[in-house]
Image 1: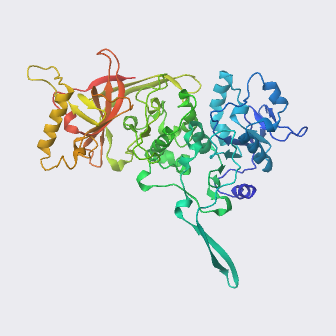
Image 2: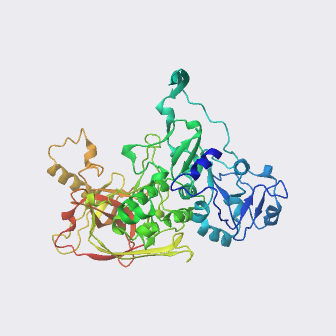
Length: 538
């Protein structure tokens, strides 16, 4: 690690690892001059070098900094009483001659909401200004530590190798299966706050389950130069979490905004698979990333519970995926909206469990364009000084074309209801059985050559030529009446339609999002009888 730090000093684009920064409100002095025991200190604006730790708290309780033990921690504490991850983080920090260490559990007063709220606002700077972030990726509990021996490669081969004339050595190689590393499989990759901690860090040393890895702005190295590489699947680009590719250079983001938005959408997909101990931390735990130069300056000025001003109508067409390659075959993600309010229904932050996806249609090549007009969008933050964090309310006002339909969550189908019945101008409401039977009849009439016995799936909305809907919550299984709001054209030709599935309690109440639809037909929303409506969605 010392040699990696020394090399990093000469990297173009990397800050000097020996440069000092303003220390956080509290830090742990790992080797005080007047005593052997570490202690918590308040630097009061002093500058210095410090390390940070990214780790999993776990479920088992452990001692944290609070109002009752504050004085004791300031005097000093026995390192051996700490969870093993903290003990080892202190040891690593000492070995690198870094005088201070920041650990959230020991540097934030955990029973003080005022202190926690203030420190959450500083989280971006705490990790971005640290000399090094120690990443305990393989430990599920803080008591486990991260300095254990790593497993050997399952199968390797050593052969003679001529280094230069008359100089011989050996060359070892192993199976590619042993080299491939999917960081999403680590316990740390399942926690919400740790994504921000790793992304904002200037440099990290990751103690993974298979090896030790170094990362800085110049690239990645592994211990002993072992051959390991991050997992990548060309068919899974928007969920392959390569941390170095999720942040752009600030100037590049300003110049090519749609690429910055694509990075944000991938980040949201990766982040949505993570969990926070407190459900209301969903937006807090990503606020520091939102403030990063890759996003806020390029995609703002507005930030609405995880969505940006730039191409807002297209962002609103996010959808929930219940399947993920890391799950066993047949297993589904369970998505739901928490009982306690944390975001408006039109925000991806309102969903827990499922993986949020965007079709990444922000580049000009996709010919996507908003069909509806966003008249107003607003959110109310819980803390006025933290507009990128937790919100207590939100409202979206749009002008667009709406059709009523029966939606079948279990099959992804939805059937648009006729604009008017034969007797007058009132909307015709058929039963969902009648609607589904009509859907099948119409489909067979248009597709007479399709063998439904051989391929019954074509009747479902998952077929490429069908309009399909996706519910936001897995608990929604029964057919329901929905309002289909056309949001944007989609596809290379721009002939398809994507939009939102909405419900409302009564004619006077605002709308609530329950899902998304795609591959709609433009002609279904260009009927002469159809007039653009103004909707309020909460």
